[in-house]
Image 1 (tube, rainbow, N blue to C red):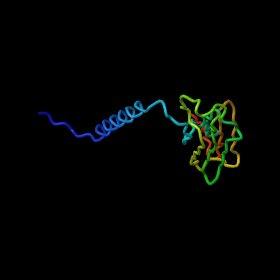
Image 2 (tube, rainbow, N blue to C red):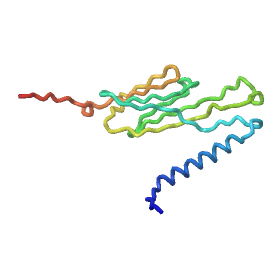
Image 3 (cartoon, one colour):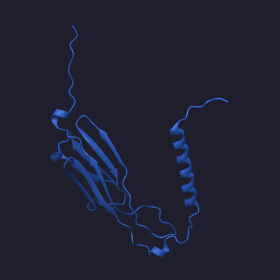
Image 4 (spheres, rainbow, N blue to C red):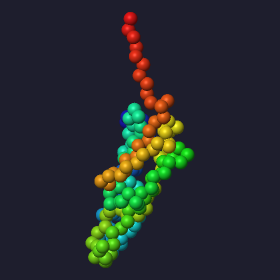
Length: 149
């Protein structure tokens, strides 16, 4: 009989797979009838990337107007708040299925000390909120030219 080294991560992975199967089985058995319109919590997906001049955050906010969005920078924290309202054009009893998420959301991001907080800019177009966080001058990378002799 060969000895095998115990790997706790392999067991955790197996447990996670079993839990995923359990929850997917429960979801598959949920009755289609009797489903209620639930306005649960949701958070918008974001992309965060860095350029030489700034850190940029892009958030997906489909179906939301700019009046329903709030961006606040305070104490090295960027807070993004808003609400995706449920469209009441159709009566609730006429819906067969509601899979899109609705309700208010809030996300907070801790900012590095290299951000010029007074110069933060935000623009909203086609359901995408783009927040530009400019870096202070000292934080920008500097290139040093090396002379070869």
